[in-house]
Image (cartoon, rainbow, N blue to C red; front, side):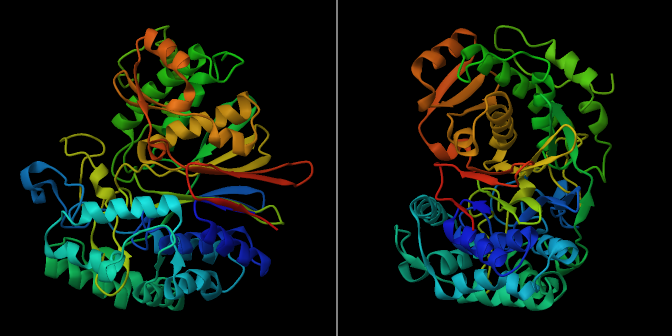
Length: 512
């Protein structure tokens, strides 16, 4: 089974399973296809994280990139990091992540795994509804940008007056050739070969700080997943520099609370929101690159710390402050094979199409992950050369408390992601929903202070009850604001797979 936000990408992964591949082959094939069939959210110049359950063990891969050697606070105009252009571009880790996942766990040849994505890029495909809307919005925004670094974007994503209407066919021969170079070199071309040289040249010619040396120095990191308990289950995340720990802190607080039996009870939602606010306060204060600063992961996941934070939650909304533990653009996919292999993978260009910088003649759209660095001196996440930024993309995985794997899950959408993880886990474990129900249920999202956005489907009565508890409730009509997710659960007794891909996106659960 493969579940993701674009049906053609799901079919790409499914074709690898049908050809005898395993869940990792399917996941990498799906991820590569998503750079073609959903470039509004990710690309070859993305970052990637993955959780892989193989051979009875859960493995974590951090394939996020680091800041260029020349990207310092002194290099920032006015001391601020812009959201677009070269300055927020860190080394893209996705291509190395594909290769590392495949080298360790893949079964079929790497060229076969990337073949579907090459086909879609070369021969084209028709745009689906949500994709078309996001693409057209991207074209309108990009036409307002000036500078030589932005020119190749229009050549790639709006060639010859291309308009992103539903059913319009888009193809990119340059993207296809780049994927072929990646397939033929096992990704090395992107970091030390011809593709790296193209990136280096474009940066030097248009004012970028990313260099060939930065690309050549890049490597992924295999990490030990972190976890917390919730009602007889274990929820697993990638450790910092990702923000998955925010979901675990919130669930750790909620594990000591008795939530009402009805999912949309205002008191239960209030407790969830308050726990999430406190968890975010901790994450935004402490999450950073652990290779540069000491991130107190163990203490932040300590049940005693969760109890102390839980004690701050009352009957009315609070202004969240971090504790002292010492005292919109992303794609997600889930894959499962017949042998019990399970993959949770997420990759992203961050804000829609990313930085707006496309390397000429390659189809490589570079992300803008560096925008999540802090510019506050002394902050753990402060910008520094060779450092990885606070990262919003997080793959999730659920198991029983004895370690029996249940499966991968994820919710896209910037800072919505930990909040989506909390809500999906609660919908599944506390409220007994199947994957489709758990994903489609109305969502809320804490923004700042006491401000909380809710989907209009949550209803006026519940919104007013939350407002009476001190929350500043704002109804958001744009479903994109609440993320888009997928789930695959495997029944431990029968091996039967159950999947879901929510209605907020164009996605599909593909199985055979």
